[in-house]
Image (cartoon, rainbow, N blue to C red; front, side, top):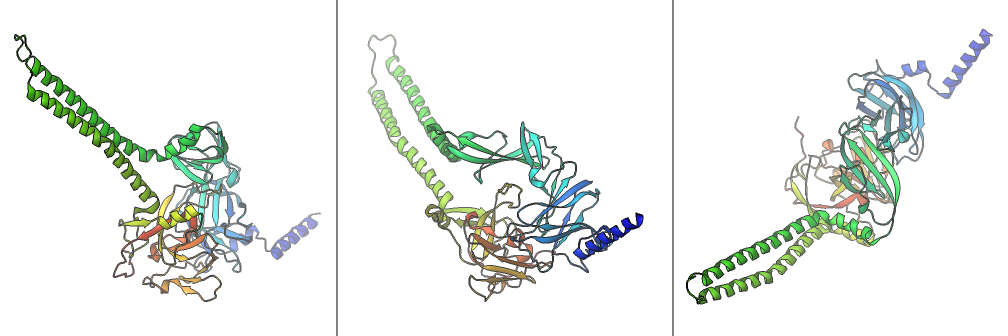
Length: 503
């Protein structure tokens, strides 16, 4: 019997070896030393000491499943294979179970796919889940405010890493930092109140996502469907609340004018009574009350001034309202001012410099329900949020980013050896984007990664002029056209030397 068991075990091991399934011994023999076997994806990360279940998912641009190997360690001497799985972009796949990690200095996470299965520009996503939770990334929930909230993964990798690593731990948040409310996929408003203000919703059926961020860095989300009944107040209230930030200064200005008018009336009334007493009681012993004609005429002049004040008050209020309205329309839909934060667009745009955003083309496209497609090499401003969340909706805080358009819808973008090549639609002749402009000597570092992606009809590939110090489409992938907010207007520098970062 023992001989049969040994024979059976040997047969199983031979089958595993033939099929390429890694065994425990094979895992320790596989190298992840960057000097000898450079991985396609890597990340520096740190997690608290615990046992974790590890899940992986490819970016939304990947259309096929690939074999995915995951390792951890700082060099080949302490490298261990965490697992192998058939990864895809449609669902999370568990690549490791109950794996122990010590509370030590940051370590590296490496990922490999077969060379024939080159992935696109968006990095794969790795989620570490505390094994005590026993849940998958989209089903890690906790009770909060008598409702079931989903725990949002916390990013533990660096933004520059081409492997995004997140962590889900037991919820321990107490103090709320802020709450973002998303309605039908769009950010509606922000607050520090965890109760939804339903007066901000128009009548109809809505999908509402509430993202609650806590001071300890953890976040929860609640996804719910709400139906708002039709009534006149509910139709007007959302527009009123949306315009409230504009109405407040207008109301303050009108209140100041009315206050000035009230003070003017009070002073005129006091002055008239005082003069009337002076005119009628300057000689109390006299049976005849004298009338001072000058005072009489003076009162008439005061009434005239008051009438003139009334005459100009209404036009002044109207001018103020129209002026504020014009400023609101211009800054919302035509032109606005933005400040550059960072050196990613050096030397075209400098850090902390102020420039104008031309919004009119984007506004016209929204009104006509068409697409605003900028020209190649235009410098554009767009809204950027984290598109790698669990729920499939942008839930991080929205920021405005300025970059240069490199690839247009339908074009193929290839980055190989640090060079950006753009293949126009229906063309096999590439445009070397970096060799067409004065920033040609600044090339993106390859880090062993090749990007080859075809843009969809609603996507743009953007990059910073300072290629060595820019987080752009090479890191977070293409941007959506509906994320555009306008084109940057600036004076072209006469000397566009390549930016040299300080060492």
